Length: 69
Image (cartoon, rainbow, N blue to C red; front, side, top):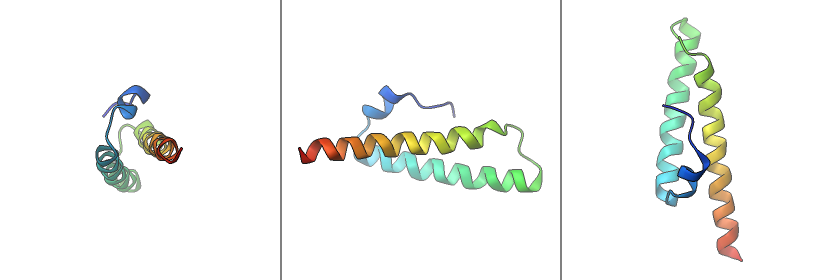
């Protein structure tokens, strides 16, 4: 999975954002296990997944704040 673009994230519904966060957390969990067992080939994917999660959470918080105004 490639790095997510901010425009793609902004186009998502809140439900899609939650689903993507869950999928990324599962992927990150699996990547951590692969690293621990020495099977991880693409070590940069851990960092990308962590940052994708943060990106989605940031956009979700911005959308929630805009609704309150």
